[in-house]
Image 1 (cartoon, rainbow, N blue to C red):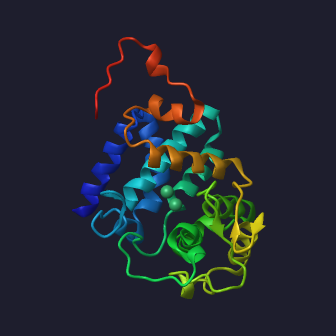
Image 2 (cartoon, helix red, strand yellow):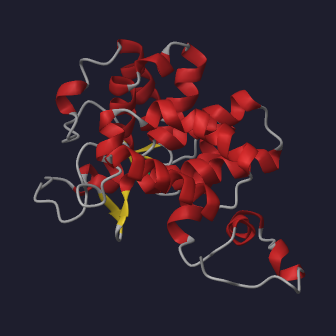
Length: 247
Ligand SMILES: [Fe+2]
Ligand SMILES: [Fe+2]
């Protein structure tokens, strides 16, 4: 029942971003196996996991995934590259606990949610979706994209000090090489306890752009308007017949 309601909201999001029916099918095929996991379903509930205002964490993640798809198509990327970028979007904010109005106190500023949640996302993705981390290169691209999705905001370096992660007990349970990838990514261009650099890979960089488009583009109502945030060019403004209807 809840799943039907949430499934409907995915369709509505794809319509909001003006995806054609054929594109909706392609996007859903990538989303579905990750979306149906119980931990993802929990994050579709805006009361349990509000992310921005009243938007649920799940809806935010799905919006990022759809915009990542649109941006990848504009680049003319093949299916594999596009799918990897979308998987990064589906995993990027799978942090452990809701971050607003939290009672959890952190002893250091750099251990707060903004700096550490990409690391929790990477750890939870590897814990809940092990089949996505079978190939070494693919794993490296996904982990690096998740770890650096907040750029130009820094990420906490996995440097051996206490990071006060909410996923602490899971770290030793994920495969050793995944932990190694998280350490390598989060200590690149290290400035004391933080790392400040974009993803090494284009799939991660495009997802990071999509995250900004979604997070800062609330008032924009069309995909061309959203794309303008990245390209600086809005086709709608050239079309005199375009009506600026709010969805
Ligand atoms: Fe994030
Ligand atoms: Fe995000």
